[in-house]
Image (cartoon, rainbow, N blue to C red):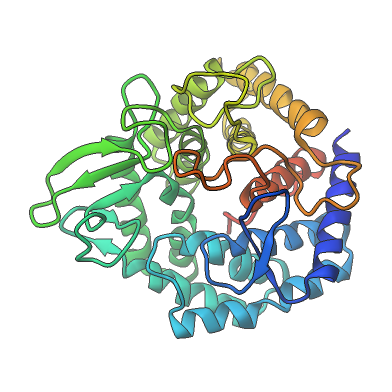
Length: 373
């Protein structure tokens, strides 16, 4: 089942590369991507899929396609195009770091280090966080962190291991600790965002941007937390990060619907028209795979994690994947972007496609994503 799903996914990636040469996908509606320039936070996922495809089957077509985008990503850094946000890790871990890891290209390594330095510019030492969005003096977002940023930290941990410079590690570690303290609730659920006073650094309140309401648990945020804290543990060996990842995972699993693919928020009223978020389940699957690798056979949670992983991935493959739909541009149906904002509440999500493929190739062949050294 996994192999067939992967082969179908690889064909779709190849078709997109051929149909939209040099372009990158953006989220729209109507089961189509909007293809265009490198100016959003999501373009790295598409290039990361090419690297996964190449490593899985060694077809040079995917390698050549992925390599062709490096100059584009480097140019974006040089010109500072739409980089007033923290998602630089999403962009460059899956493009430049991935290329360096697979090919050893020194230009890719240099671009990735430049990206890490760009991300460091969002560090707010008075608060102890990497600011998520906007400029430093932004009245709404100047003291705001979000749980998504945990997946941007591996770029900094990687930069530390490459250079030996403590600043990368120290900032990533501090942000992870603040995320653990302020974004994770006592019951293992999570806030999407948290606000701090920009002048004195005092904690203000938890909130949401894409979730149902401030006190609810946005499922994609919970998934970011599962995977992000597990990766933070891998790099730091700080036991509390592993424990936090496991707590978030257990909450996620305990609130799964019957088909093991989540709705867009755990606290929203479920009706026939309530959107799912297949991308959240794909991210969580990668987090569970990471936890299974980090925990030993004697861990009491291992069976729970493995069962949930298998149920979720089986459901994604059988009921949410576009397997057999030759003209489909996306790999997973029924992802949601910003339901409350009525922005693509039920469609393809390129990050959902990426994490779905990452989970599949890790299950089938042991190949991991590009959050690693």
